[in-house]
Image 1 (cartoon, one colour):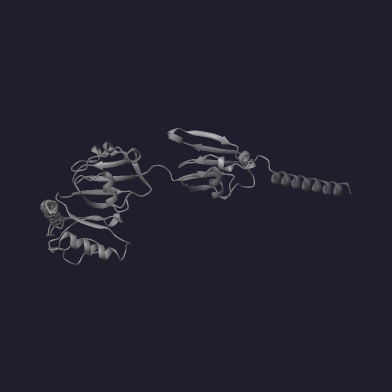
Image 2: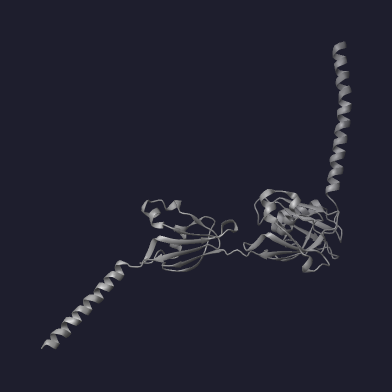
Length: 315
């Protein structure tokens, strides 16, 4: 009995600390939920993050009339709603457009900075971003860059400075290396300009092809692919004499390619690849069978005419 009684007392003694711990944890969770579910007031800056759609992730200001300039919820007031309630509303509205949307709404404790992003981006203009936003985050806020953008030379003009004091940053180098020190610091009022790439997005194909001209190039276009994009070789094409002019690594290269040899051996996949701005010239044969037959026909015609004229003169 004594052993049973002592066990009950020990269990009862354990319950009190566990109960206190549970109350403490509940209080912490309740406090955390209250901190997270902030009541929204006019003038606040809200950070709306939609995990599955960067275009719908925006920083918006609560206007004096209580509305926000957000695509899915512009006419109703958000004042006196909590961030959790607005989160639920936006999740419900987005569920009609996106499968299983994940929305987070929070109040920015620091005022966002205003930046102007121009040039080769999908949505040029003014963007609001957190004070410590990176250049890559700013580009995403502008819808991302378009294909013609030169990421090797992103131009940044600081507020109250002219173009002569502009700075240039190699964003492509950061994307390749992941070195955060390569990203510039951004300040309120900065202008970010994505310039157009000077590289040609085309390959020039000339000479004895059926459709000479400029042709768009993909990521891995061989000489063979580009030749047939230009309609294939013409009747007088000399496939043993194809000239390639390119600039790999900034160094000019100019060489003749015996393409016929690759074709005869069935190894067209081993032909070199062409890059942006390259030129291919297919030379024509000096003498072709067609030209030979035409010449022979002309000679026969001349001989026939000479024979007829000679016969008439003899009479």
